[in-house]
Figure 1 (tube, rainbow, N blue to C red):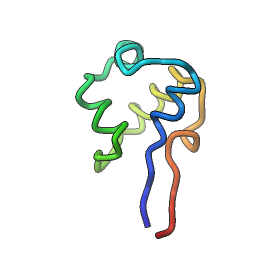
Figure 2: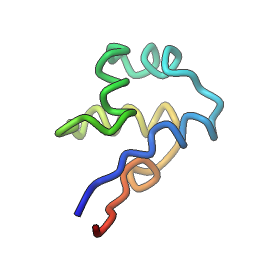
Figure 3: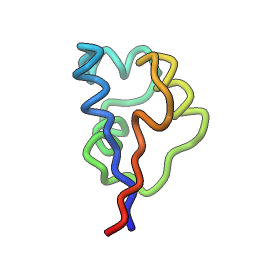
Length: 68
């Protein structure tokens, strides 16, 4: 089982760059990049909430469960 992060998909749909999202959410580019590439081991709910607010989406739009 795996959790897949679709942050890049939502950013593309909203035509938002990593730099722009970083500024809106107040998260470093390095941490957003780790999340975007799926290398993150965890995410705080406050971070997820801020990302959802900036991208006008739901948590399920960003996180997906895949049964391997």
